[in-house]
Length: 240
Image 1 (tube, rainbow, N blue to C red):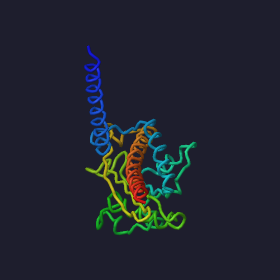
Image 2 (cartoon, one colour):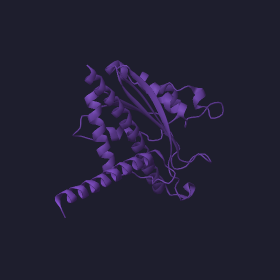
Image 3 (cartoon, rainbow, N blue to C red):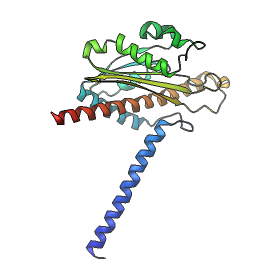
Image 4 (spheres, rainbow, N blue to C red):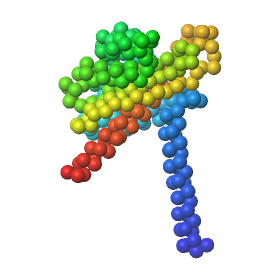
């Protein structure tokens, strides 16, 4: 075969592989947003790599994070401080598992938490209110003048009929003139075993897996927000 023919064949193969990689990446990102049949565990190696990449961006932007956690009970803050060789940008965290704590420490309105008159504690409104409270009462703006607040609230290893495994993750940020918020809903795959029939250790293990699953989703949202802010920062620097 002539060299030109070989080169053409190699180019076509590389183009095909590149196209496949792009499709695989898009498919992975899309599946990370859905959860109907997803397993309740996450790849820890992938999670550690994501944390490392996230912390590098946050450090470059001098953008600290504060967490407000309900269903994950501090697991998100623990994950963000797990990389000993990376400078942590975790400013602090609030575990607000009960509604009275959500009210007192995060200033979540009682009407939001009311299951009869409001959307309830597992809702978009509550997730965003938790980030607002964390941003305001966590001292992140007073200390750094900017930062990101991330929250988790949901039903893990059970829940009301029809809402088993429902989770909301909220995110709020201030970076220079960039101010915004977002909230996303996820559904943790329901355990095939009857929750009421699980032993204590089995139920605890299932709940821990679900916590890590939610933490992984929260890290994806943080990475998305940080990457977008980083992109805007680099674009502004290029103009200057």
